[in-house]
Length: 211
Image (cartoon, rainbow, N blue to C red; front, side):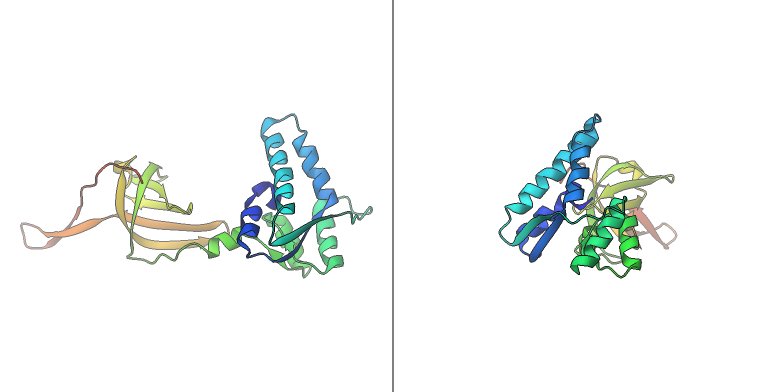
């Protein structure tokens, strides 16, 4: 999954990963099968994975080697990867949830690029203002959905009326899940006195635009 994902090559190019990367020969065989698939999407994913291996071999900050270790009595690729990591006393790099869990319960250290990506996202706190474009309707009435530059989803109360427009929103809460982070916000408001003297929240007008 890491090879098909492709981000490992970009991370390696930054120099944050040092040492030796091992790619199992049986993983390359699986990638080749996917690359030869009759389904165009699977074929594209398989070819991308193979291309990423070649990119890793050309990296200057890491050494990437293909190893032929195999475990004939173990047909499942995930189980083979766990055994390979144990025999080499190596960490296992994957984005696959089930493989992550399998390796973790057996004491194998797992490096998950999704965890790394989430850890590097800027912190956002309640009350903080953000600017984004509402790109689609939300699941609930009046909700709109936008995304930050890092791909974080922002659910905006009152955002449905601002589809395809750039708006200023105020963060109300942040939800962290196993799948990533989700931000909840409201369209920016300003307080004006009503005729009876009580304060009243009024939605500020927004202008159309893109970032």
